[in-house]
Length: 313
Image (tube, rainbow, N blue to C red; front, top):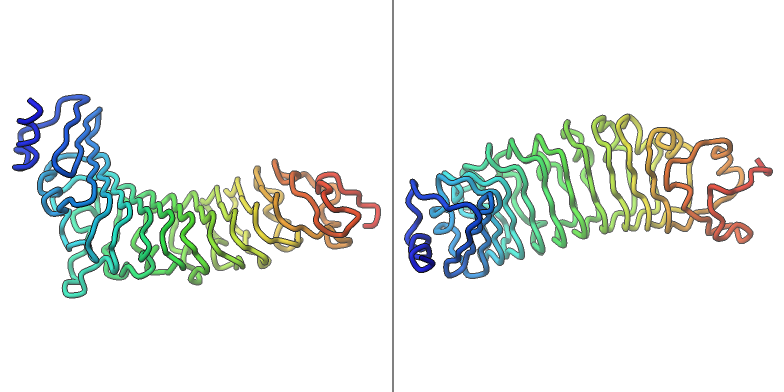
């Protein structure tokens, strides 16, 4: 039976054939698991056009492609496929789009199918030509991890007009285009954890009225400009821990201090100098905010900010 199933895969599964519940078998490079949804994992050496041809007409929950070895994704290679989540792990993709045929998007056929796109360890992700990728209208979540993005461009995010979750962790992001997130009207969660950001500007996130979780932890943030978190009425969780913040500036934190439920500030070299911190007097601390400690002046080193005395205010 196993040999027969492998022959079906190698030859291309007939359209009327379907996998039985909770079954698994493998071809030379791919594993097909159906329990209860079809998950396909392909190891290095697979031929992408052959894989997508085999899967045409079938609903695929996850297509996980490991070690895809080609500088581009062929235009239209996914035409006829029904893929809910696509994972590209350790691809050698250089520019994503074939420069000789930019009219055909590499994700053509998935514009109204794909819900999650995950990219892992793509060292050349910064040079992918997103401006030639047709919008993925049904995409709700995008994940990049340990990939060389370096910056977040406006045309990159325009490919995902209805995105709700953006998770770009450990991608060495240094800067963000002005208003890069502004056109995303349904965004709920943004994680830029473990990157290299040094400054946050109002043009980045201000005005995201549906955003409820923003994670900027483990960056190199020294400055957050005033009003950077204004007009974000749904913001509930703000992660700023493990950065290089020294100031609890009233113009930056006053509004968000009253609205967020969870605020992480620990592991920052905070300066608890008077009168700069006097605005904290008689205020209610968001959960976890009080776990932050002072690094200056000397008499307040390691003092929890929730237990400061305001006699000098």
